[in-house]
Length: 185
Image 1 (cartoon, rainbow, N blue to C red):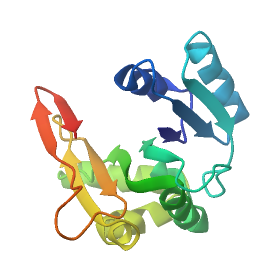
Image 2: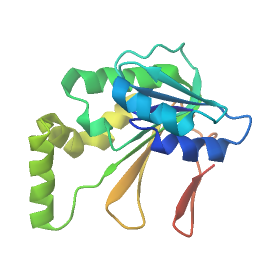
Image 3: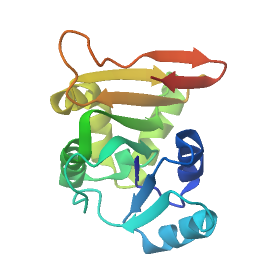
Image 4: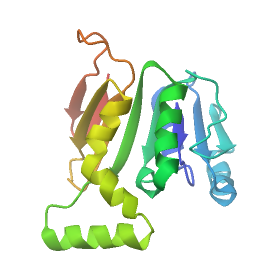
């Protein structure tokens, strides 16, 4: 599993726990400082590797990963970097592999929604607003199957994108909600 834009590696611990002793998780980020913090968190854990790289130019062979995750960082990729990152994600995923992108959902409350857009603009992510309006369409251009699941609290969403899903339904992912957890099988 690849955790793209892993930052300080918080998600790596959960992913490795879910994959078990034989699973392998790679955390990738362009920030040396963030990866240094992640290394401190994961130093004594087997099955976790850290790679300093650009999301738009991944140093991995084609079809290297069963799954790619990106948590609360994809909208921060700007312009062409975001488009190239999507192409790279598809390239490194195995057939029927999944890309799980967790991001904040657009708030329903008009005032909170306005502040949400102001926050994106203040980060220099004007393109993120455009992407938000077209994200399902953009994802469908890259993946065979795309679905959106809202987090139980309703503030975040997970876009579940499956590569090369056959049209007859074989290989479709199954979602189930158990308590506050969403399981993908």
